Image (cartoon, helix red, strand yellow):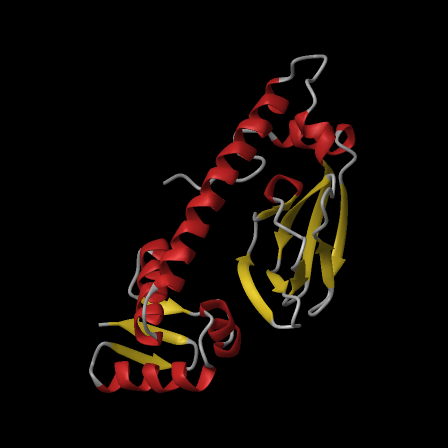
Length: 211
């Protein structure tokens, strides 16, 4: 599948004009800094230019969960609104991360000049929304597995399919992975050891090979 970004099929010179037209601005965030907090209407889109971030959810009891990981070219914000009545959602940098913010209303408004690059961006945004919906469905499948072992294997197999390789490097810490899969970290560590002893995987740090 073709890798889609917000600026796919938009020429560099057109991108520069759009940055001005859409009131784009860039900011750099350090590890642990909050990039965006979700509300009922944020009116902006965030695009990760480099770095990595995670979308966190904090429920009414104060429990924190990782909802999604966001890498280069990932888009978040207004088009992907989440229910905020009883949960607090926010995007947090996990390393130095640079983000471009774009006013959402400038994207969805009809361009008076009917610019091709404007229409292309809207098309890209729709495709990104569909991709994110599919990824969330994959995550629901992982979380619906009946055991820690099955959740782990569902995640590793999905990562292997995405990378087209059985040699994997986990994109997050084991603590973050346990949060992402909603499992106990100690139980997950035991299952990883069992999988290795059974010859299903080989593991060295965050490097995992599926046999």
